[in-house]
Length: 333
View 1 (cartoon, helix red, strand yellow):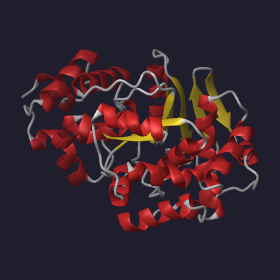
View 2 (cartoon, rainbow, N blue to C red; view 1 turned 135 degrees about the horizontal axis):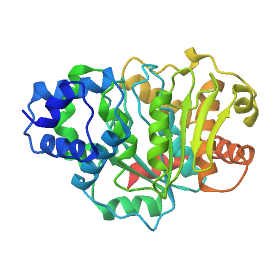
View 3 (cartoon, rainbow, N blue to C red; view 1 turned 180 degrees about the horizontal axis):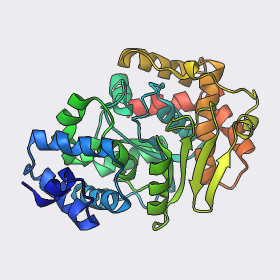
């Protein structure tokens, strides 16, 4: 048995190099399905260390299909998932609103493993054709303002572990890693995290990068800004606590959201209907406010405007139909 894997079973932590080597072994098929399930389960019993996340991420980024988007000042809006809240697809909707406001978005995502519907399920259901061809993706960014990177097309290892993740049906270490693995390396990221300990680990990791970022965690357990509680937000400037009152004051409607209003559908078809409804300006007041608030924080990473001004930009993108038109253009290419 792989020595690093044996150390994990003995409740030891790995060095960064050991973690990297373990994932390289996994990518080569040298770790069987039973061991893979055990490996992914270990990190549900304890949080990964900063060194372990760093090693796993380094292995996956070295093994991934490379693309170069350095000419774009773009953003990714992404969450870890695994918060067991079954919300509708807030982050993906926020991406289209940001693109509708005239910014560039390099969205990275996948099919669901611990939730009902992932961003890839939504886009595939709408007719989007996944690609890993740099030329095609750059064309989408140039002409539409958004492109989508379906994670398994860039990270072959995800295809190896997909069955194990799906059989488990709960969050795994790959939920933790997902937001860190965008092969387009966008210069800006809004990252939602499902627990405070992981948010701090991300923060320590991102302090050693040149990325412009905001790591957010709703204190009632959501991996997004949901207007249901206070949030912790980590940026290059430090740690900030936004109270629920501060958050709802950003918008015009001044509402605190009932968690029941954020529920997604029972299947992908229902979630696609919710997605199109919100993007068409026909979402509920609560759905709109949550999506607009996440888009507002994303826009504030891309410009120096106030949160209030960026809220107005996000609202115009949604209400004018610009955000929905971005989707139509993307699907037409």
